[in-house]
Image (cartoon, rainbow, N blue to C red; front, top):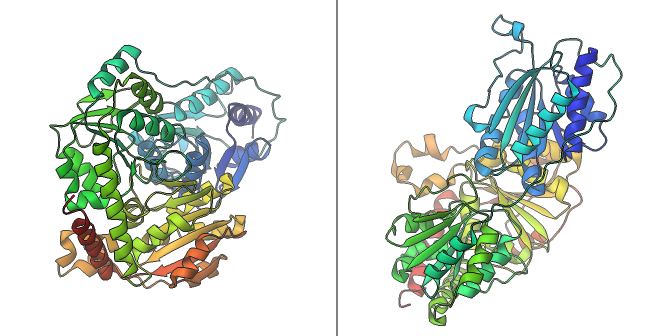
Length: 563
């Protein structure tokens, strides 16, 4: 590297470290040599070396979601940089702080047939909150490089969080030929919470007091929210329809007003019979389609949506949007309420939740294991204290939302639900396990695991102690719930049976692997915290899975028919 290239790169990486970056995910490449060696020379940053860029980016996303701090992702030029795009999209819509730094070739090598050279400027389009293209050998003013690092960290970790992209153009030579610059001074970044005007909170609190209402909490990761939600619900006398990803379903906080069976209750139409006067919402759109369809179908009901930034109202049903921090807003509303509704309102919801839970248990007791609802439900009582459950999209997250229930065991339930894709599930869960130190279980479908199979090799190489549970129904099980299930071309285009044995695949990639079809062994395995990565394959039947869900819904409907 030239003197200026060395100065630019080392100053950038050291500034990022001083600004709080603690993890970097790196894949091999020539053009990214300056960045990789700069990270290697910065002890404050832990490097995680991966063999493919897509898995690396999702691994970084798992770290960032778990630590709630920006994580660095470094790639070389060409299609390697493009491999980051799925994770960048997820980070954008899941509000996860990522800093993607892609090494590039000089401008004069673009569009002239130079190998491994594409147009990387603005590569991720609107998926990145901010993109910047820079020439390392020209823009080496230390003050400006430090300012650039501060801007990357500030924007990635801002409100809302998200991905930012720095494209750095390097000229050869790429190996350092000069001494690294000395220590760098960086600006301080101070963050705060957006607080609503007290007079507005008092006004809204006055409107809510004494009215029959429901608090709906979607996916969110603020550890302060569960206590604030419980406090507000207690002051209002309301039930809390809590998404599995809300942080309210599991833990030692007050869960006495949490309705865990809202999804099956909504399927039966029971929510339509309750007719609340007002709904307060926060977090992302609920995982449960019946719940958000219920919100969409009741626009005559006043709906107060607490959203600190952006706009997440796909049901177009919000009547008041409070642009402020949800936890502090709920605490303020609790203090502003002048009275709660009669206990009978909450007790009807609690009674329905208990009846639904009992009906689910009875239906599953009568259904042979393994089946997909039983896998999700048994985790609530089998996972150890202070563990993490990382859930894949498609059917696993829906089953966890519908059947996990509520538990006093502290379990953090996480998922990539920004764009709801199935790719990267295993990598993100492994990234989370790598930094949390918590017993971590990754629940994924077979297609999601196939999408991310190389992550198992990474888990083995890095000895990440996580359990990957593969619900193996040999194809696209979720499509059996859709109208195209009866089409003559269904199996070819949607079912897509593949016949992969994940026990054999896992062992080939270096992880311990086991097939489980016994409920006792499954619960035992869920309570373990292995020292090595392992894969558990649970085989189910796609067609029978639809019938199991139908029987459960029918059982819940019968249980609450007279309520």
